[in-house]
Image (cartoon, rainbow, N blue to C red):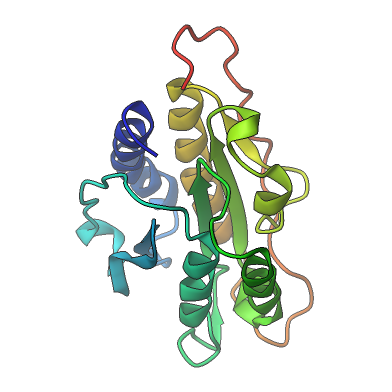
Length: 210
């Protein structure tokens, strides 16, 4: 992910922070904690591993290089969603996967990473969304959909900078707001997560596709 894509991604995340703050302002009892994983040749914490409060969150500039170790990123996420590291009761975590390429990890590793995530109680109860950047041929749609657990949303496809800006803002604010409105989840609760409102439509009139 380079050039226009990474620049737009950095811009979109920074612009989303005040929007998230406004979205949860009506829920003062909710404390939003943030962290982020970057992945290229391997996966590592971009912000974290300790979660940061929304008021203290700062997005460091993300640069693009290397491969697309998506499976490693999902495994790193799973370690933080374990029963030992998550509260007994809490709001559903919001997990957003953003990628512009095929996973370069072996297929069996990716499948196992998704299977393990689905076995973790907080992995099942989380709100999991995926945003694909670029043309359809640039990424594996079926692969990314395995991460998503919002059937009515599906895979968000950003073909241009406007789409990416809109989808990141929508995903971060709508998912956070929906989580804030929901009741605290107990590991023994039935069901998975809350349903989201429909995402914004793609912008087809853009003259600057990725």
